[in-house]
Length: 489
Image (tube, rainbow, N blue to C red; front, side, top):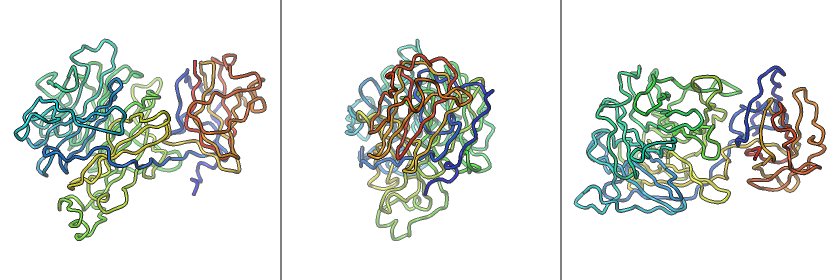
């Protein structure tokens, strides 16, 4: 059933509103940030495709309690970091190690023998950190792309728990050999005014858009797992946390337990931070004792369940921080798969990071079969930019943007239509008057399924004559999905 709220017309913003300056950046349809009016169109969450097991956690130092995976793009290779943990015991125990795996394509993964530590009698292993107090419980690295970053800080990471005093900062030249940046935690429990914090994956990154380091991490607020954000200019001194709120255009967004947040810049639109978060449902039991015994799940890990949700947050121009997530979609993004093994406690937790795995494909990864002998990392695929779309049915409809100012020479669409459907794009002034030569009537109907289709009008594809002006874009659609657009140089 179509979401009724999105089939209603959304009132245009005031003509006096400041235009949104998008320049030549790619814009996705994940929220209503650019939407001024909708009629017969709505925002549609897409469903990732299950592509099967990417990596089994089957080494002796890995096991059923492996998790908190981070996927990094390093040149033309991918590297996954994750906690190896074969048994259930306290957070931060010496049984927890940080492991890595590598891939050329994001589909086939292997373990490098890094030979740094001796684990269970051998150096033929993929362990890059161990015996680091609580740090290996939730070690979360990233590739630091800040201009001028020293070679020995090319990789940075956070790890640690409240019992360990807070988040420890680490650095590395190669992402394999790690050292502390200082002996004391850089975000301490004294800095965070909540009863409990830090005990899941704490997500740092360099924001090229905001020109600062950010960290999104978990706290407990009124006994519910929530997300806060802190900022830093040097990765060592951090601001007090800001509690992230949730917004939905149609209803009050629920406050749900979000176990991990996995917030990071989307690689094709770094001004948009995507969050594929683990939604935890404490006490929501699915399995019987007999079902749990059949899949050999640890007895302490089948009386809750979880799935993955999708939300976004953006830096807000003129403000110090973006203090909320857009929860445009309240439904599950990745549901538990078929079979009892997918409906246990702390399974279906998404990895941090999105990988391009084809010319028109990207992949997300999910930790599944937690606390079981079959624990593994699973891959799910989507089309590029295809978290969600602006959708229109057979009856047809339109969407008009808020006033925009763009730069570029051509308008590129990532879209798909049926054989009977299509999309046309027209430029209008702030009062809704068509721009001569670039109106809907002048536009050639766009039919097909492409990642990068250049829109053409009777005069061709060159839109530089209207670049730099305050305009609205009108998308007239029938039986089509529009995933993103960009005014390209």
